Image: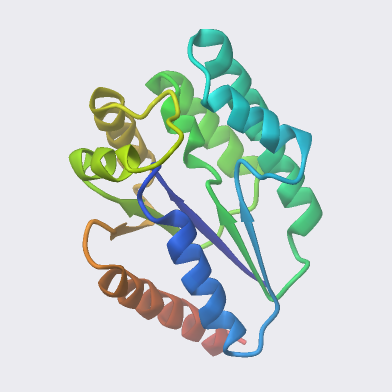
Length: 193
């Protein structure tokens, strides 16, 4: 099974690129499952999204708690259920927490949750992210330039061993880079069989 993680800040193109990766493997005749968090089909995901749209420390804590439960549910329910499983918004949600806690939780979750060589962090400059986010109808608590700068810095630090993809350019350019990495990783797996 190919386990792909697509992570990044809001507005970085996670869903867009996850869908393009899904199409890529569907075209090869594979069964593909995509799970986006917070998900819309269970109480954990719904409550995480509701808290993200709120303000204050209580909503921050609630969002983190429900988001974690939502991801854990997805892993339990979908890991191993298709040739390719794509998790969107998986580990980097911890980057929204203060850094010492974020680093500890990242190490904890990356130890207990499945990871792989197929981990992509989609990176965009904070000012471009903010421009993209302001075009949306709903706004989450961290969608301001100051928070985007801080969270991006923490996420980049945590994603040291990931494939960091610049998605501040045309979608086709970023996806071409992703596809080349997917091909290389797939070929490495085939050569070890």
